[in-house]
Image 1: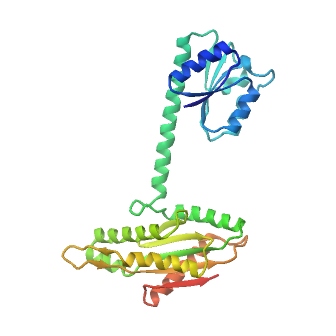
Image 2: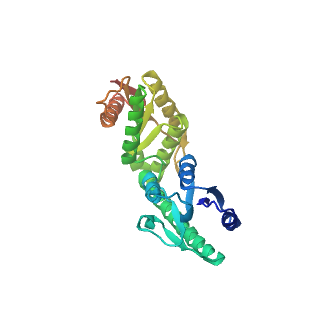
Image 3: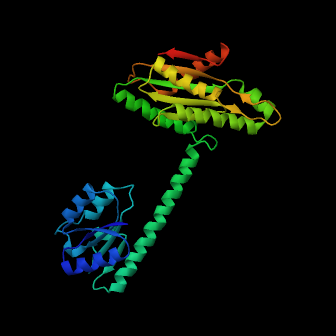
Amino acid sequence: MKILILENDEKEKTALVHTLEHRGHTVVSADSSGQLWNTLQQEDGFEFLIINKDRMEAGDTQLFNRIRTAYPSTLIYILLITVNVSEQEKDADDILYRPYTDSDLKNRISVAERFISLTNKMVALQRKIENQEAFDGLTGFMNRPAFLRQSAGELERSRRASHSMSVVALDIDNFTIINDRFGKKIGDDVLQVAAESIRDKSRPYDCIGRWAGDEFVLALPGVIGADAEKVALRIMAGIVDTRIEVPNEEPLNVQASAGIASLMRITANTEIEPLILSAREALARAKQQGGNQVYTNYL
């Protein structure tokens, strides 16, 4: 753990640093509350502050409030060492009253370690749950709500940078027939083959989602027209090149179709939902014309 301490008495600082480093922590020290504040702003990763009230500048009664306000979503545990505590300093998570013994200090540090560890585990679990809610379990791509949020952000970044953007909608030709004839297991294999081709043939930073069923969507910042068509064709070729084994049947060759909405100029009124709708309409046109092809709407 990375710990920042406010202590300018060399004897007490040495004892405190020794105790913390012996427990495997990384310690940075500050001699004043102003230096502590500057260190917090210049370095990342502090989870634990140990502050000797006697080393704070006179009149600096809002230090804890400033820290909480500046880092509202970051866990920073504050242990205050003091003879007595004032109303303003009750923002500390724990208080160690002077005089204290080495055992008292170690006990307060243990409490902080347990609290921070438990909180970090809870945060990690929450993020895991949020990721599970945002991603499709079969393909690993974003689900529809997550794709809408992410692609809207990509659109806004492209707008600010005066870049173009294309949205690709792609699905498997005759997927319903494949699923009905060979069953869900083979259908899932087909979707995973499609997902793998999309992943391999697109850029690492492209925004990719599973829209519904066998339909996928991609937001491609900085890509327009013929270049977007090349991306779609590479993905489709990757799907065609993969033979899917079917029990007691010939290997299954799968084809796909794609629709593209290609936008050269993004204005203040441009929104992501109409772009996705235009790409899906282009996909419908590609399938109406026989499938295994790309149709592009230029906007």
